[in-house]
Structures are given as C-alpha cells and as structure tokens.
Image (spheres, each protein chain N blue to C red):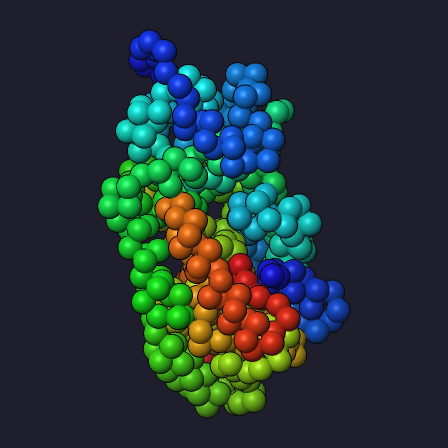
Length: 243
Length: 174
C-alpha cells in the first residue's frame, strides 16, 4: 500500500513516542516491534491515508512526529485493539493513536466528536445529544403510559426514575429517548418479565462518552465521575449497560 | 459495571425468561452476530461472546445461527467505533467497513444482530452503501419476539417477513 519512500531528515528526538511510553505500563511494549506485519494485515484501516499500524509505529519509532500529526489516520483507526490481540509482542499501537488524537488542538479535532464530548456537559444527564433531565423524564413517562394502556398485560410494568436502592442503575444511549423511543420498550418488557430491580437516574443516564474518542482525558474522567456519583447517590449496586 | 448481555443469558438459564424459537421453525431465517470490540475483545472477553451466542440460539433456533469468520475476540471492528461515525470521514469509514460487509455477506444471514449502538449504525449503513440484503437488529427485539410480547410498533428494524409474525396486540399499531 505504501507508495512513498520514508525519508529521514537528519537527527530528531522521538518526543511523541517517548511521551506515550512514559504513560504506559511496560512502555506499551512500543520498542518491541518485530515488523512482522500481523497488525497491518488484519487491520481494516490498513491502506487509509497511505497508512497502516506497522507503518504508524515505525514512523513513531523514527521520530516522525510532524508527519504523524499531519495525518488524519489517527481518526480512522478505531482503536479496536485487534492489532494488540494478534501481536506476538503485545504492542499497544492503539495507545499511540489515542495520545496522538489527544495532542491535536481541540479546535482542529473532528467537530462531530468534539461537539458531542462538550454537549454532554450541558446537563447532568451527560447526554451527548443534549437531552435534559426533564426531556428524559417526559419521554420515559409518556412512552410507558402509552404501552401500559395499549398492552394491558404490561399494565404493571414500570420504568422507574431515581428509585433508591435498586440493584441496577440502567443507562440508555441518547439515541433511543431522543430519536426512537419505542425501542426502549422491548428492553423494559424483558426487565419486567425477569423481575429485575432496576431504575434510571435522571442524572447520569446517558451511556455515551465522546470525550474518550477525542482523547480528552480530563473531560472523559469528569463525564464518568458524574455518572458514578449518580449511581452512588441512589445507592444502586450495578451500573448496567444496555450493550 | 455489568452488561445486560450477561443478564439476558443468566435469566434464560435460570428460567426467568423463556424464549421460544418456534416462530422461526418454518421461516428458517438465518442470523449472525456481531461481536462488539468494546464488549468482547476490550472488556469481557470470549465468555460474553459465548453468552451472546447462547442467547441468539435460544431466540432464533440453534440451526439458524451462522457465525462470522473470524469471530469472538478475533473479530474485525465494523468501523463504527472510536467515533468514526461522527468524525466526518464517511468515505474512509465505508472503506474500512467493507471487510465487515463481506464477513456478514459470506454467512448468508438474513439478519445481523448488533448488540452495540455504533455497530448497529455502521453495519446498517454499509448494508445500504454496498447493497446487501441483510437487516440489522438489536437483540432485545428478537428476545421479545421469541417471548411473544413484541408489539407492532417495536419492529422498526425487522424486515417485511417478520412484521406480521407473533404480533403482540396487533390492534395497538400506529
């Protein structure tokens, strides 16, 4: 796939790779590459932007920081970790990608990701689609009532909000309450039939966290913290993912 | 933290949920399952992939399940992860997704079960983009179908051949 010969221009210190190695246990094994190419051959992002995981690591090892930063490839690798899974030396290439994303200036990062990360902080729901506590309550109560009436076998079904001491604090991807609320109903039915002790929280219900994708570690942590505190405040035992 | 996939499997094993795959006895629709990277390779590993297969077989019938190759922790990412759906590179994202599209198509499945929202959006998009015939569906839809409680308005992602199957309160349709 590579069409251009890599040219090394003079001596240069590999600041980016060194910085990432300092952050990772065992330095992410970033100096252990055997150049076997197992990562590249099994990576769906190979070939995009004239890049692949082996070449990416090699460029980092050669200190080609500017070239790495000027490529969009860091946004095309999904950090799925298949390369680590396959790698005989367990080299953490996705951590290189993650930190490269994080070193992009915020205003240069892809707008869709950046805006979704920031939108989550508009309300304590942490919804990347900007749904408020009131929006969520309204949708849940409205949909529940409709189904309790139209399907009498589920007249007793509940979709509790802020029920203290529940076993499960169920999160919800914003996509359902905002764009396709009927999709929440099968989930509620299953929980009802299984007799699960669960609740939503009007605070912290949104499952998504785009700050991970723009590698904003501070906002990522803040986002998780709001949700963890919401679970603790209700005294729930588990944070339950719908995925 | 717990994944609802673990709970579905536990509740079926404990008999709290009793899915019945007989709706598919004559239809014989084939189902494959996407192992989400975040759920399987990056978090809970192969045991959750086994739960996913156990649930799927319980709701669609064992003989109607077809695995993708490769699968479980070795599965390919679909290209919907890492924010790719929102990053503004749709051409690159679809190029990335062609591997997943080919994987799904090779199973010959009528449906791809996608337990992750990003996988769901991406695998649906590449189906439309590359012109595949499969549908993309959440597992909760099929679980409720096999429990006999899936209403007419809860079938957004089902194909026409399943719009009329085991409909709970058909009169409540809008």
